[in-house]
Length: 134
Image: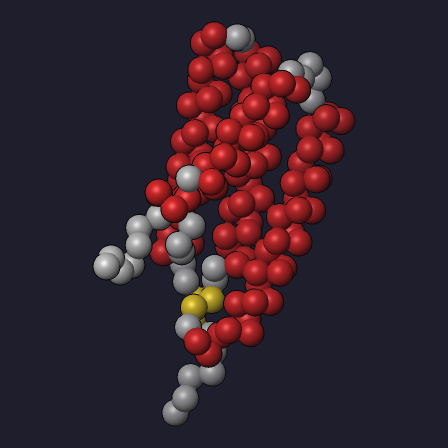
């Protein structure tokens, strides 16, 4: 009997789990540095910026990497598109809620930690293990 259900990967076994963990650590460390050297408003502004970058990436990872295997190719492509669309919508929504609802807010700290957390994605090839080495 052929199993037609695509194989689902748990979140901790997904390829992006290491990257997500590093992003969270970077956001928390940046928040602590802001708290120590700038103040409380900068710290929670930075934390919000880090969370605005991190939460949509968690959503994307959950949506995009939940299927594995050649038989699930169509589901993989569909889930990547859905994950990216949801990530963009969630990012815009989180920015809107933050700017509308959080007062006082330090925009430089928010955007600084947001960009720093996103910069971890540029370092992804260094963080994710290769399955086969030459």
